[in-house]
Length: 255
Image (cartoon, rainbow, N blue to C red; front, side, top):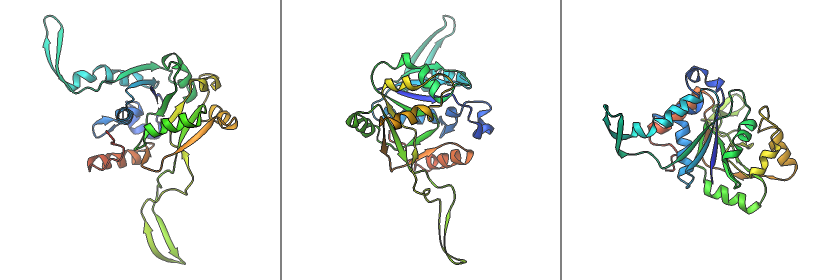
């Protein structure tokens, strides 16, 4: 199976950092979060990626074009313009970098890469969220129910600590509990190519009419992931992920 990663948005809530690079290129532990996401897929045998570019997509292109060079020992013959690679730590991935427009919505980006997907079901996710999700089980769940689409349902982490009160007395304080128990779309999908027929064009938001129509028609099932999940929406989220990585406690590091 291939994995499609949406990596073209503006990342406005992280504008302090995204003014010079796209959100998926913000680094956790010295590597872009996009790389972390790809490693999660590769750990489950998915090594062919279609990345939907938009805002500052050239930064992502330059990263991958120079990826092997940065990870290898090289000998340069300056006179002949020849480069010889020696030891290389580059992953054995096939990466298609597709321009899908700066202003294109999420559904439009997905529709624009139709020619790169073939006829098999594929994974799809966003370029700003990590999880310790078992993608092998997700794919098996999708195949078992036989519908057109599967999304991953998660309970988001809480943003603030919660007080346990008895009147005015504070009995306990729980640091960052999970949210109110409601599940949300966690962004890891398995999709049939036929879902692309439900996307009208560039202005279509994937999370709106396409998903809603799939749900109305009984063609959308939810895979429940109860482990770690974190989207990088704010600088606070980025700092949290960096702290987990720095202390060797990054649950999404399944590779």
